[in-house]
Amino acid sequence: MTDNKKQTILIVEDELPLLNVYADRFDEEGFSVFKANNGQEGLDIAIKEKPDLILLDILMPVMDGLTMMQKLREDNTWGKTVPIILLTNLSADEQRIKKIVSENKPTYYLVKLDWSLSAIIEKAKAAVLPSQK
Amino acid sequence: MKQRKKTAKLRSDTAIFKLGVLAKEKELVRRKLVITATALRQKATQLAVIAREKEAIRRKLVVTAKSLATIAKEKEIVGRKLTLTVEKLNLQAERLAIVIVEKKAILASIGDAVMACDKDGKVILFNRKAVEMTGFSAKEVVGKHYSDAIKFIQEVDDKPSPDFIAQAMKTGQKITMADNTLLIRKDGVRVPVADSAEPIRYVHGVLIGCVVVFRDVTKEKETDKAKSEFISVASHQLKTPATIISLYAEMLLKGGGIMTPKQREYVSEIYDANRRIVDIINTLLNISRIEMGIFSMEPVPVDIVAFLKNGIQQLNGGLKGKNIALQEEYHQLQHTVSIDKLLLNMVFSNLLSNSIKYTSSGGAISVKSQKVKKDEQINGRIIKESSLLISISDNGCGIPLDSQSKIFTKFFRSDNARREHTDGTGLGLYIVKSILDQIRGEVWFWSKEKEGTIFYFTIPLAGAKQKQVIA
Image (cartoon, rainbow over all chains, first blue to last red; front, side):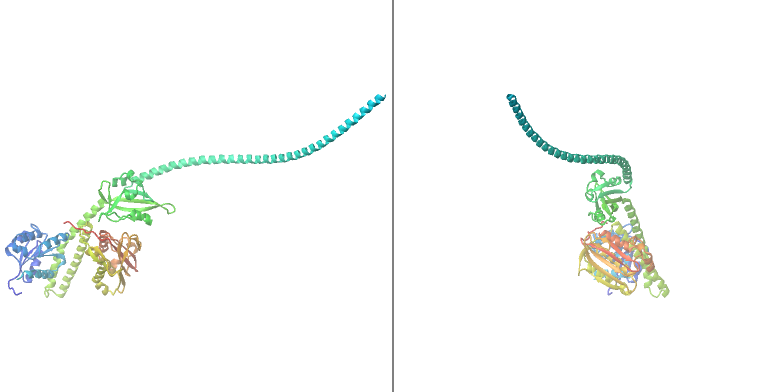
């Protein structure tokens, strides 16, 4: 990377072991990591820190991931364009999620169980690239 | 004196004359007598003939009188016999009446709905439970053709169910209703039903009609749904811990040098075993989604031939690894049908990977496609609608006879399958059957232990309906 400023990522996940392993792995990859335990916390940190990328769980207490994403996309110029990777094990209503994903670009949707950490890192790096000037 | 003489002479002359006349008269009389005698003789002869005839007639009359007497006696006997028969018949009629009443009582009391129709399909019996279940009175139904009387539809697409009653009468075999059949009640309410039609045969195998038995399966369906929901929730709960194990094992395996080679091997085993748990979770979730009908179906035009070739390509590793000879035979270069690719892939890959799994090294597998028409018979199965028929045959270990009726049952694995591969879930064929039920396809097989297996499945040419899930 030519840019010596670290890329920032916000990870929003209520399941602590998952939050920690994602955070450790992204840290190893040279990202500056912000952590949040639910959608509300995530929204607050996102607005304050404006990360380059958000890794977002869907099913969470207080505020779920989809609501947080819609709020971000609604009222903020930065929020409209920040790449978001939805990470979930919720697959029952794939149809609905796919629809929301296509309406909220740039958004990606990964099923946790099907994706290894290294595959997620690759996806994250690819998602961040277009936003770099 | 002379006078006297003269007188005397005259007198004698007169006498002579008289005598002459008399003689002539006598002669005449004699002649007449002769004639009369002849006539009398003739008469006598005639009388003799008549007498003979009369005698003959008399004799005949005697004979007739005798036979009349005999006939009269016989009549008397027949009369008595008839009286006896009438008595017997009355008795039998009474017995029959009792039997009929008994049978009617039995039929009426059967807990399942029973409808019987004659060979022309006219309803001749409709029991109490049938009345209760359908909302139609027996009067409204009896005498009508069964298809005008009650309606069965498919839950999947609301179309009329395949006419299993006609099929039973046509084939002379018991036909079971297709899964997920609904009965439309008189008030329009739909009731999930199950069961069968069995042809009625008379003594010499002559078809005289059909008995249809059906029952309300609402409760079974509800139980089934609750069970599917439980599996779904439980599997979902397992996802997060499985993800955590997977990601942490990955972290350890990535950080080379920290562990000894043995430790690395141990973690690798944990990682692989967890992968298997993940596969089972995904399979269970697929099943519960199919069972609950909450998976989406997105039919797109699919070239089946290209699809099969691609499916084979995906499993090429397994084929090559076991040096299995694969033969492909397609009915045409390409054939496009509207179907959900993901679901079709689950069906085909399950069947083909089974074939590969249970065929020994150096064996042979063949994949074929062909077009089949309604009512055509393929290895014991009557085709319900014009379809594409895909068959996958192998010369593998086969399915033991006593397992053949259970292979589509959830979690069932035959003993020889267990011996060959210990790690199967017993869910593959169940998924295949469940998916095909949803897309109106069918699946069946032929198999002989140690000889091989042929699996057949159909894709209706009419194509599949889109099914959106409302979340």
